[in-house]
Image 1 (cartoon, rainbow, N blue to C red):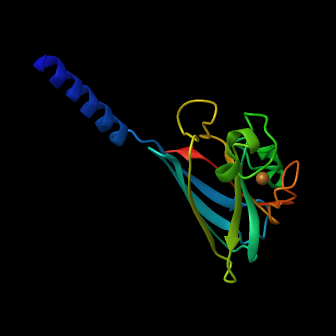
Image 2 (cartoon, protein in one colour):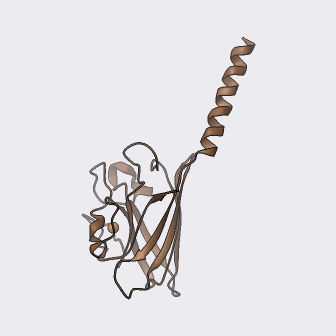
Image 3 (cartoon, rainbow, N blue to C red):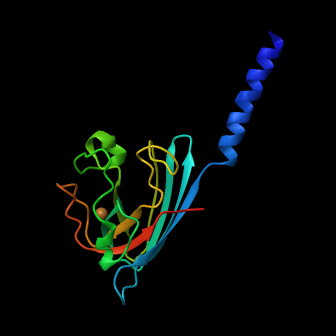
Length: 172
Ligand SMILES: [Cu+2]
């Protein structure tokens, strides 16, 4: 009995150790979609036990709320249109993922980035269920889009207008 117990303890310890060492991370370099635009930013993503931790910061953006989403294609061309629609593997309607979950929001519906009078904005959120490694909610290689206008959560995509910033989620 004693040896079985110690073996189980070893397995548990090995599991948590592995989880710590191999927690996946990714970064995004947010670039302007149009020449002459001052928009820039970065984002860091990290798998944590509660989900996927996202830390984003932008600058050179007009003050106010700007829709901020994960889009389905890992591409930023054509003024951001190449990124395609919102990442939406569940074929859900548009919403706010943190509040509405995968059944009532696109998996890419991060909501809005609030930009201050000095043109900078930051967002930090942990989203349960998103991943950089496995399952249908894996967002590695997808794109991040910063929109011209506020996401008002209207259908079908939040009326956030043009795409002013874009970057690709790149695993480290
Ligand atoms: Cu979008």
